[in-house]
Each structure stands twice: as C-alpha cells, then as structure tokens.
Length: 175
Image 1 (cartoon, rainbow, N blue to C red):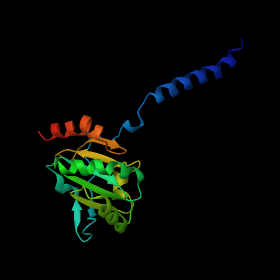
Image 2 (tube, rainbow, N blue to C red):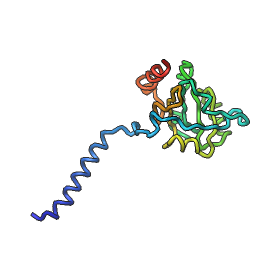
Image 3 (cartoon, one colour):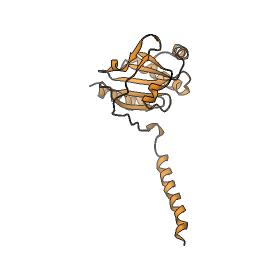
Image 4 (spheres, one colour):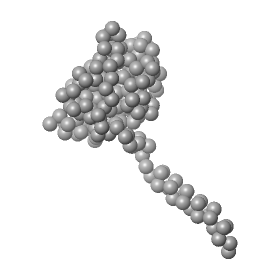
C-alpha cells in the first residue's frame, strides 16, 4: 500500500478524535482569560440617572455581580425572573450593564419586567462589554472584594447555576 495514501486517512482520524472530544464539552463553560484577574475598571452613566456616573472602583470591598443584559436580548427574558427572585435575597449587590442598547428601551424593559438591579449603567457603544470579553448577552461576572473576577456565567443565570455554583462562591468570597 502506498504510504502517501495513508496521510489523508491519518488526518481524518485525528479530526474525528478532536470532534469527539469537542462534543463532550459544555459550550457554557468557555474559559475566560479574565478569571482570577482584576476586573476592568470603568465609569458609566447610570441608566435611571444619566447625569450621574457609576464607577466600578466604588464596589471595592464588596462582593458583587455584574450582569450584562439588553432589552433586545431574548435570553435575558429567560434569566430575568431568576434574577428578580435572587435580588430579593439581598445576598450581594447586582449591577446591570445595559449593553448596546438605547437608554429609553432599557428603562422601558425594566419598567415592564421589573428591576432586580441595585443600579444599572448604560454601555451604548459596547466598550465596557468588550473590556470584559463579552461574547453575547446575557453574561454575568462575580467580582470579589478586591475587584478580581472569580466567575463568569455565559448565558442566562439559572436557578441551578445559582444554587450549585454562584451562591456557594459568593458565600466563600464574603468570608
């Protein structure tokens, strides 16, 4: 048999192995290069009071959750009732980042579905989201007292994610 004929077969086998490994991975577990690194500092206008700025430095000393959302985001509607219930527990401050959205649309959306956030800021241009490496909305970042990102939730926050991953991490970080 010709050895050159075996090369395509070998390449095909390697590709099948990589595909098989890839199919076993959870797409929501995309590793973030920002985990265990300082969260990008930012300042942005508050959604409800655009003349006032929120500065992420103000959160130093607190464990907090940054939730990236938008009024045009279908998956954000899925996670919203979960965030509404979680916000009632007052476990930690939740800051909303209205991503690539018009302020009026974001305010209308919060008025219609409820506002789980301690405050929301506007990221019309998406620059803050880019700094955080946002792939799409919704995404959430758990940030510790020193301003370091400890966890990234890609996709909607679910009751299971809160119960099994996020709340235990919050409790540990608040010690």
